[in-house]
Image (cartoon, protein in one colour):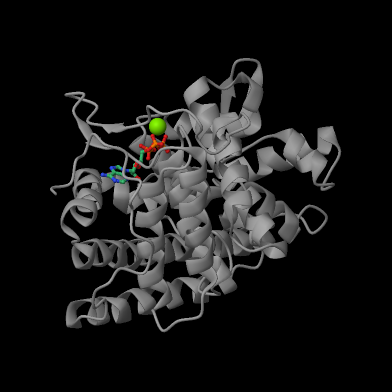
Length: 359
Ligand SMILES: Nc1ncnc2c1ncn2[C@@H]1O[C@H](COP(=O)(O)OP(=O)(O)OP(=O)(O)O)[C@@H](O)[C@H]1O
Ligand SMILES: [Mg+2]
């Protein structure tokens, strides 16, 4: 019987697929992806203060991943919202929630394995409401332009929970599959189960990163994987359908391996550039600022986020209000920051950092 896209796919087969996954092409791509990822892990270890990068890169990940869902905000809105989350527009808030969900998941896997429990926590954080496995029928993936149904996921809470528990089992099963290949399989399966009424794409993309952390392939959730997916979105959709309708696993796995390779490489470059800018700023400050003013914490505080303000220095215990204001002005004089008035507030932009992040 041909596959019916409009009928709930309750018979979704459990993982692993019954076919050879270690094809020549996959093995070759796996080597390249691992090499890039190892390089990323290596540079992330060089970061003296992880908070430095770890704030900015996941912000990019959050932005791209949310764009896949057509939640578009500007870089500038995001940077501002970091300083004043309450005043942000709904789109921007949603992007910040994605980053928050990424962190929530990262913290959670330190004490428990990746499981439905964590999936639910992530999805609830993204959606800012209590998400539960779907109970009512009617969820389908549609082409946003034409309304045509592309895929109908399994239906019925029991059926969905059954698929999820075999997915959990597969995630933690010992077998000979390469972890990157496994990540690709898990991502397909999670999307095909589509446990929630919304937010499955974003939750699934966070799971990818957490899975790599759980496997020890990454120490921090800094991989900017959604960049690739947002740029190759129609391919992403058609490959997912290809697996369901024609069992085209090889193409799907190759796509995900290329995503890991490409974005690991990109992220590594970015981290190097940020680290470089940070080191240069450190040398400049040490040479030009009075001894009583210079501290590495001061330099770090302007690299933690692209926009700085007096509050940030006060909160991190670097200086009291008045002194902090003077410090920021000194950094501006050195050309490291650019003052900008937004409403009643004066912000200091780290333009070097903004340029790196915006490219
Ligand atoms: N044919 C398909 N089979 C299985 N999953 C699919 C298929 N087409 C798309 N998907 C997945 O469904 C996701 C969209 O589902 P949903 O709207 O629940 O998630 P979202 O996070 O709100 O959206 P988005 O992923 O667009 O940001 C896609 O991102 C993709 O991962
Ligand atoms: Mg959606």
